[in-house]
Length: 377
Image (cartoon, rainbow, N blue to C red; front, side, top):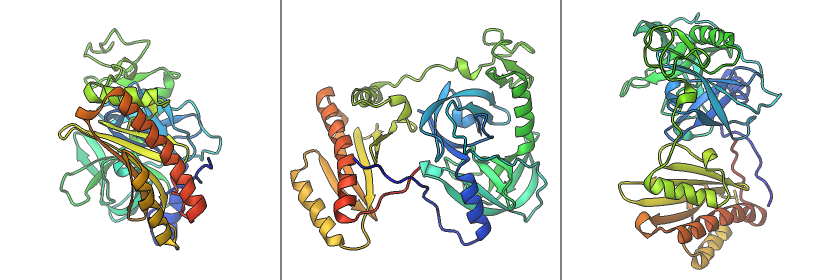
């Protein structure tokens, strides 16, 4: 099967400065996924360290990372600081094309323009603009940059960038119903934490929430801080994730279909599978018992649309258990099944059929009807 062309889906902006930042940071910003949530991080250079928020990686020994220059892979959580809501992830495979990141201490002033980069709601690489409303907002004895560049779930851990393209902060939290009031941790905290972490020569570490002392894997006393005796947990001491109930069944089916289930987890009861050129999202809704599989295929062609519609309708007469549809410009192949009707054999057969047909239709519609590839990292 032919592979899909790679790229980045970008929102529309008008300023040349923002476009330049978009091009610069698409090689640096990373999507992070766990069994509990998704978020954003950014590479701190070619040494394989990704900065993000602690709450993005909390209770995980490892997370899944992916970007335009990073193949999807598992990466170790090597440092956490719950007070700063800061964490580092170590990625084992990194492209030599990764650009050098410019980190800048907070010299912002109210009214300065800023840009927030991230993966909100699991979307691929979006950018929002805003201005600084308070460059030194104090909360819980920490300084934050207050701004109105829109932040949404999934933006956490992404960089806040100034007009010169320098990282000035890490997007950390928003005020609920606060009309786009967001807060970013200045990079001065990041630089200090990075220096202390590197002094441990690569050992997994955390900062004690009680005394703020650094605790490394060779100094921790069981599960207690060696400085003050408070209970402390290293990232490497987090319990391995174990799915339960229907999630366990779905993960067993994904594994039996030939996919590494650790790489597919995208938050609670959500999984993403890549089959050839197609992307398939699987979700389980506990309240209704509904399991959905949605393969987002290619985009409708710019002409001869009637022919492709007629083909999709004809295929729906022959497909069993699957449905082809159009949502906006997306061609989607869907599977719907209720958990009470799911058993291992039928479930495996349906999932494998969904994966196989998704890749087939994706290529067939492009090659025979002029449909357009979706551009995703």
